[in-house]
Image (cartoon, rainbow over all chains, first blue to last red; front, side, top):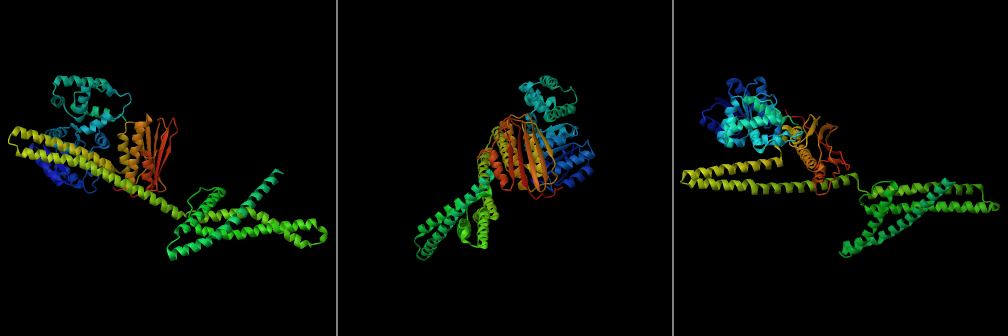
Length: 216
Length: 376
């Protein structure tokens, strides 16, 4: 797998390169500003771009905007956004085109190395990786006749992990239950929320996120 | 008939005021003499301050009373009283005018009556006319004299617009400095008790791991350290948010408002009609004011929905928040809403609250600013 990395903090950039390469992921280019990022994406056509929200020259949301711009030009380009903080606002923008291959994680999550690498791979394959912090914010939002209250606590846990982008297998591993149990929960959830059941992993996550996001 | 009586009564009242003021003015001028003596005495000999100050206090008291009177007459708000001595001189000077007017009136009336009753004695027509003219002029002049004295008093005793502005600025500056100091103390305390404490623990755990011979224990210690670092990051993140929300720095006030609306438990509809970015301190003040209001709405109003509208025109930024809750919001001193008003006042801004019991409520913040152009 080939990755382009955009991160302006040198220590973190080097650390990420080492981390990814230790897991057999090739970092074809590591840049530290937005214009160079767009250039690198054009030249290398990587499997996924890992991008910090805040980049020079303005140190505002250059990285996020460059990533969205690149996706407009090439909607199939998977992008994983890293940030020191998470905002529902940005999550919304990233999910707005309703195509997969999107990730939005706190930089902190890099510390959970295995999960981070899984997230990178998942996004590269067209899936999603939403930070649990964003998901909990989305879950906490008010909804008219909140159907979430009809879910059991276990089902809410499964829903949160689905929204993060985990597959059934990954969920069963995380919660230490069987695949079959997870499958039952997901069917119940889809039934209670009135979402069309679908086997397609990506479509499922996007449906859940759209449901959580579209409430306001 | 009634009108005539009323006019008569008015004139009599004016005459009374004029006479009172004439006597008062004369008395004040007389008091000035011993005051001047005491002032010189105190200067020369360093004693007798109490006497001088006592007389000054007396003069101030009288001036304050007349200031309140002038405010009543002119229909203005009573304000601080200052500049007593110039007023005393000016007021005393008008007593001459007052006395002259009264004298003219009395003289005129006397001549008129004497001529009328002694028609046969044959004073010429001209002195009679003169007397009548005098009396009439004095009669007409009376109310104007009163107004003149009121205006004079108000002008001399009220603080100038500049003095008022200076007092206002001094007050808001004191609040701002105070708030800043409190804020910095809070940050220092949060860092001390939070992140710093965690980092110390982290180092300690890693140090122990370093010395550990047994791999399993080392692994477990490193795991602890890992978790500790995670908590430290969480706390720092919250602290940063409380100082200056990152979304505000990245997206400006518009973005900050949208983000705040998303995290409000009550559904909020946001309309933004402002295209330029204000100065960062103003953005910050308005943003925190908004989050305070949204928190209030979420906690106390029982609202089902709220709206936010941001506009800017004529060099003013206007943010209005409405909710359909139960109303009754008041700025209690010490509570959040009051603090917002103070914080905005430091930028010459204001918070208007329209929250009748039973709702709905509307909160309007206005801040003047030089809008900087949008950074693209």
